[in-house]
Image 1 (cartoon, helix red, strand yellow):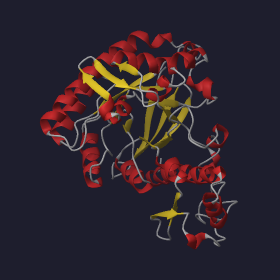
Image 2 (cartoon, helix red, strand yellow; image 1 turned 90 degrees about the vertical axis):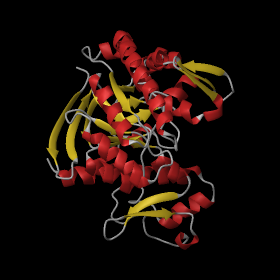
Image 3 (tube, helix red, strand yellow; image 1 turned 90 degrees about the horizontal axis):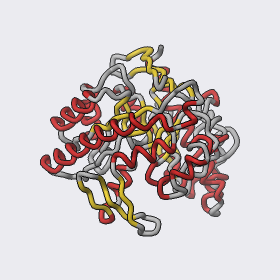
Image 4 (cartoon, one colour; image 1 turned 45 degrees about the vertical axis):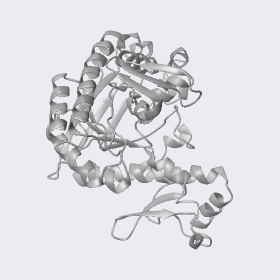
Length: 375
């Protein structure tokens, strides 16, 4: 068994409630996945991650970054340590991205060819090469429950011709990723210990901001019959209404009986909107990144999301929690005044507490959508 996905109920809006079962556990969908870039969700300890969210269920699945773990400490070291789960002491499900987006973001430090991407490390300038096969080797060594095909993310804006060329490369790389993955995924010994369970490989739909290309990309990837599909190349500078349109149209062409994942989005109101459209999985660095910069989230009396800059002087003597209706461990104990003091004083605890609250808020947002859908 590698993956099972059961849709329990679908709302009129298209949103659905489901259960995704993976080798390291079960995941309720729609789900938000905290990002643990270097096998660590920034400023938040694993034991805390296991307790945040509604009913203290914790994060049911998190994400780690292939590019960063390849560079440091190295995927072979992680393999020798028993895989990323054992290395970071996390026994719940995990997903690794392919490294494609990180290589894309290097811009002037990379060279793309049909064979793969040559790039220079952002750490020390050393030269490296990622092909679809190498990305699979790194992800197999890391051993997460879900791996992603190696893809190219086109810049925004980009012409139709440039986008279609890039999309063609993504499709060729997806097939190479699938072929290599299926030939080598048995090399992960810790999955063999789990009654022969294996990793899973998801495809990534590209096509930029062009509906016809998104359709073509989705159809090509569906032909590969992968266990799940992601929508990539969004939230890279385009207007929000364009992001929404690309997601809505792409969902039309993806299988309804498989998990659907939008990569790298967004603010709480955005992930709530996309979940109600029928997206099952999302990830974003925003909860912890915003928290480290003093931005925390709450809801007003109407239920709308409020963005609160805890650095503001108006909170210096505010004895209330971030959000009186929030059930997180931060709001249950600390005041806005104290959180502001920690941030102004440069105390690292403030970054942790802000991040814990934001992560709880995101998980609670998904719980809110699941409750609305029912099931």
